[in-house]
Length: 277
Image 1 (cartoon, one colour):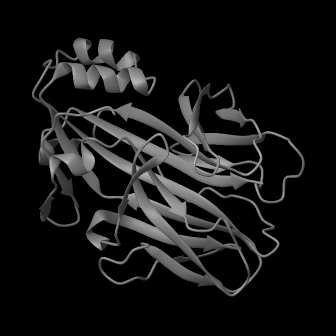
Image 2 (cartoon, one colour; image 1 turned 135 degrees about the vertical axis):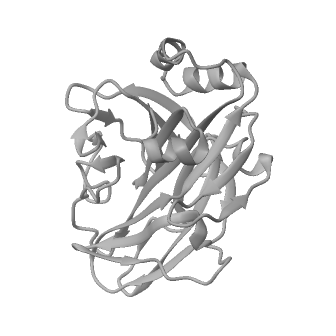
């Protein structure tokens, strides 16, 4: 497991409150995703999903805490509504859906701040997530090898087939976001699924997508795909398999974030989870 030696804290810039985290809870983790308890449900049943943090499509389960997210929503047939739950609830999402269609749960985290004390940890992170260009950019900006701060945000989407599961994915306006071009619950046969990565609403070209495929209790298998000239990847079909797609974008933080935290890098993380039958 990739470990980031870091000092961490959550930041909600709408307020000045800072919430401390233990090092092991986030620094040892890598991917962030929403995992449904069931990928298919009947109409008038409840969508349930866990907040997950970990690696290789397995990890710890986190409860419902509003101070950890900006948006946590259910999207269905062109409508959206915030996830309503009690503090500390697990699963974090539990909401009824009253009509057929493709149901999407979405989550935008607050900022998390971390400081790298070990250069190897930062270097390993860049290698793992296809961000090799950052090394030269870090040097060109005359940044220190250790003791520098990064902030990051997570943007997660997961898809559930409700009833006939008809429908299509839509962008909801995250800075980094996946959109499925095919409905995984209505696509027949063994056709691959196309997904597009968007950065600020424009297709993001030449970005690594880490695709984890998990069948039953087996260990997840990873594919490493690059987005093409249209910002797209083609994900092969495997029957009875859950998929997690994860990508990272690095950039210089906005001026107000740097002023607040001293951060020299900001990373954006986008994930998408679905099931192929």
